[in-house]
Length: 300
Length: 300
Image (cartoon, chains in turn blue, brown):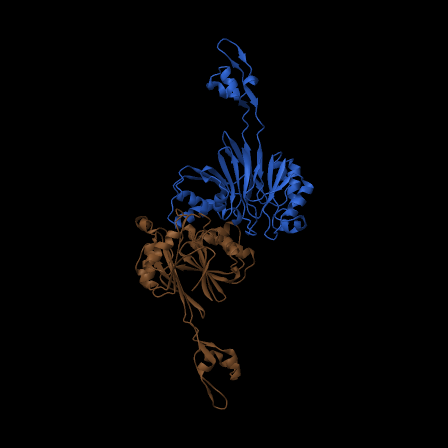
């Protein structure tokens, strides 16, 4: 299971019961939090996200609607007795803000918080299950998007078959890599008899806050799902550019140029109560678009 | 109209849809915000509090459940174009946290934020409508409670009568002070013919977070409404003392010793889903007790 659940989809101000930006990406047993606007810990509770499974948090930039909920989430994790390590990635300054807020409260977190400063594009996490890389976006302050890629396990073992052919479990890792098995009496068990092809590894790109920027299409090339902000409808493209934000048509154009399979749009301005037009405008350019509605999970 | 509206009544962690501490005191056209836990700006919107009328904010101490929502509220006020001055009072360090968070976002608030560091007990605000004083409480970090007192306007003018007796409006301020009026032809219009007695000035004490401390009964002597925390039910008095918090019986005892007219209890621990027992236990000691329920306004 690889999916993303939207916890907040509004820009700047909370409005119409929409919350500032936060999303969780679920990848098998891991939950990755991307951005953490005010109230994220309440949204996590509301949508029954298991916070003990959050081991990685990525903050795109230091505008409040993307991180004001972080200190509350961290201290709550501490109050709940979390002990396992937590890995936090964010722009320069975030660690200082957290340290200061912990200091004035005489709080020492009961878990290790590893902070990595985002400074340049590149791989941030690379383990056996997934990788996360960051890329720069053009916004009013230093800002990063993230691509999460699951790791492709080459072959899936058919355990019944493997047992039937008496292949020792110690050899299973080789089976996954596509190797055949040779029995003690010299017979060759063809790999395809005991394994099946896995579905291709999927990827998710979170494009953070950004002005219209065609380089993002290259940076997030061929992703399965792309999240791109649409602070404004298309008629406000001038205001969008002034504020280093994007419109519906611009987001859909980037998704199209990137050849993404699916587009999620969010970060709606508080000036809009209804969101229908966002969907209609984006779909004109990129039909496979969905609104990033809070509480909704999308399979990647 | 002098009243208090509860925006958050939970301690430490948000739970059971209860929010961390925040209250607004309404005094004629003024709204005073006391404490500002995460999500306060959403609660302000939810309960239709007019944020443009908030000109004074008091933060009791720097535990996150009392101030993590402040930076979000301030920046939202800025985004909404607030221009009028705002007066903020809080312990040492709060200004530094705010300054740092504004700096990393390249944000300059479009209004003047006057910060006063709480350092000792005394009067913080004293204008024609109300006064606010702070007093120390005993908690794990430096912590202050607040007493808000309305100013007594000595007499209320009966405008119909005043017009009938042809008293010039320029003299109305004298009427309020209880003076008689002498007409041009020498007649004395007795003050009581054109004014009525005002109700006595009321007062509200917010006792913040505190261990059981009998000096609070003196500090908040004879207030009309006292808010006192009740993090725990009475059986957990040892845990309360360890954490510098109070129980139901302790809060009610302070209200009783202070000879307060009414007690509001809140700051409930997240371990309690039901609150009935809080009310029952407190009422045994101080019958005129109410639960500080979110969204409910209490007349002072």
